[in-house]
Length: 255
Image (cartoon, rainbow, N blue to C red; front, side, top):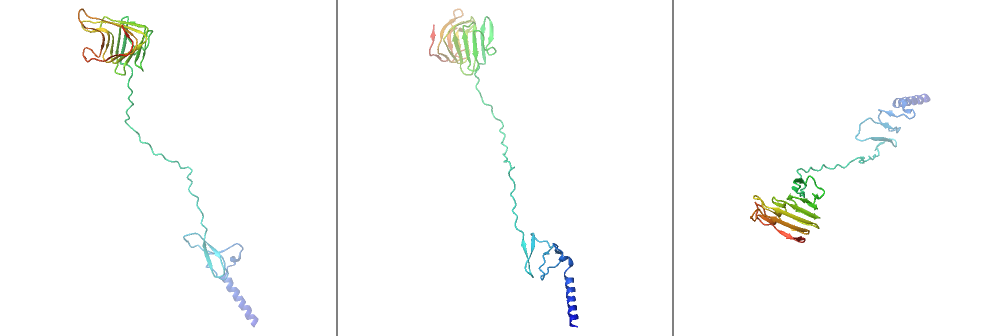
């Protein structure tokens, strides 16, 4: 009877164990899910409860489990290699005043030859004259004509003499310059003018300052009848302006 009682006790224990542990728990590589932890067998438990950070369940000695945090994973910094420095747009400067460049050329420059008026500003050069507009300089080279007329508010008008140049008129001044004038060169200027009932006459009339640096000058003036309206060289004077100008002779020869 004692053997039967022991056998029955063993069967009851086996039955109780079979009720506590499913057969699938003993399959290789498988874990029990959705079950309460068992302290006696030290099984690995997986919980579906949501936690703030990821966790893993580690197997420890019987009767306790410990939840360890996953190791921190370093995050790579943002790639800034494609960043381009942005330059702010420069302000637009409006209403810029153009640079003021003083005009060098004369406003009026004419030679009269054989009764024909030559516009030197339009035709800068001929066989016996040439004009440099940038320097405001007229060169006469064996020129023969009746008049030289010039107006210039820029830098002084420059007259350069080469060879023998003859300018004669019976109507006013042979050379008239409404500008400051500078005369020079290795040549000669023969200038002769005659007064009229309405005009003064003579060789050179400069409404401004006249400077003679070099050259040879043969100046003559013919009056009208017995009047004294003929002047060889007149500087800084005309019919409207009687203020005298300056005549400066630095060199050259007056005949």
